[in-house]
Image (cartoon, rainbow, N blue to C red; front, side):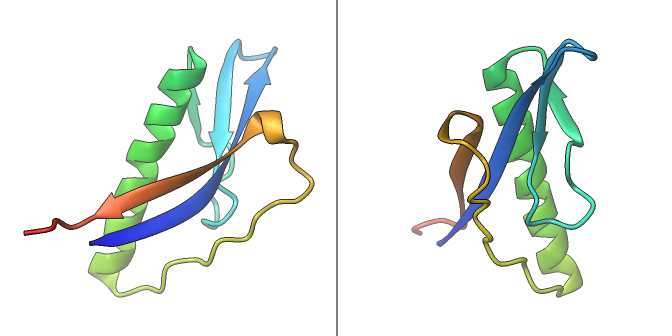
Length: 88
């Protein structure tokens, strides 16, 4: 089983009227995911990160290292852990 941790930055967009989510550790993935609610945005980003990790593994690319953004405030930053594989 593999645990991966990546930072997720969540921001409310007044202009778009939904939550924007980005993961700066993955190139070209900033602000690509959104949701009408905070939880929907988080769930959508987790699904996207899981897909990105699988794509990196299939192509043999090296996964990006976690680079915690110290400039982000606690309220709009969330560190998530994605678990792959099984205990079997």
